[in-house]
Image (cartoon, rainbow, N blue to C red; front, side, top):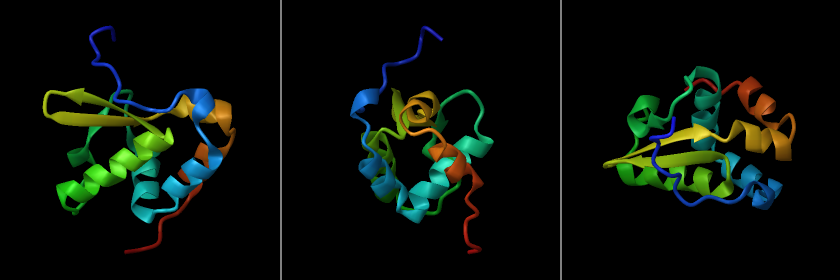
Length: 110
């Protein structure tokens, strides 16, 4: 939609590096976030609350920032909320099959 706020700063597609993406995904919580977005999200951005994570807001802010700065997610600011979605087309162009592996990953039982 044309009325979307601009994305927060993120790397250009050609600047997304595999080692940075893998480092961001090496954290189990961030891997869960990306997997949930891939498997359960609709075609719009999601707030941190949508994930149902029992973590302090400062911790979640850190994790979402790490995903955005790695080029995995795109975030937009809606008033006081930041909403996220996976940069599927960009990541599939750079690293074909990577997101399929993330989506197929089975998290350990808690």
